[in-house]
Amino acid sequence: VNCVCIYCIITLLLLMHKAIDHYNITRWLEMLLMPLIKAVGVSRKAASTIFVGMSMGLIYGSGLIIRAARSGEMSRRDVFGSVTLMGLVHAIIEDTLLLRMIGAHWSVILVFRLLFAVCLTALATRWWMRPKPSGGEA
Image (cartoon, rainbow, N blue to C red; front, side, top):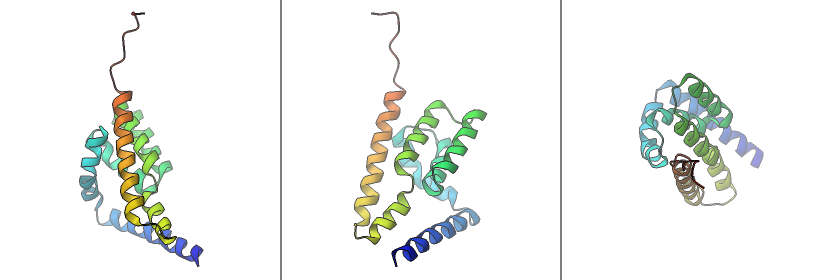
């Protein structure tokens, strides 16, 4: 029974992603992500890549990041912030649905994981991008 439920959840998610692409809902979802993007400290250019990574997975999102970084479309800060956030929140929808199936409350899984990921990514991005001390002083 659990395997059938898992199969149904994954199939439903794939169909939802196809519908989102078909009806061009991605732009609206990116707009919803903008507060998260600003909190993390990356530019708007990273929003679509982060959305894809969160919904389609790390491999596909990472491929987009590599391509954008090589072409100069994303700054080093955007690349770092995107990879960090995607690493922390990838499969958040699937994990929430699957853990809900075994009795966990959805808000605990979804809200706390998202808050934790945003806070940790914001701290990491700000720490990584801080001014480096000059090397001449002892």
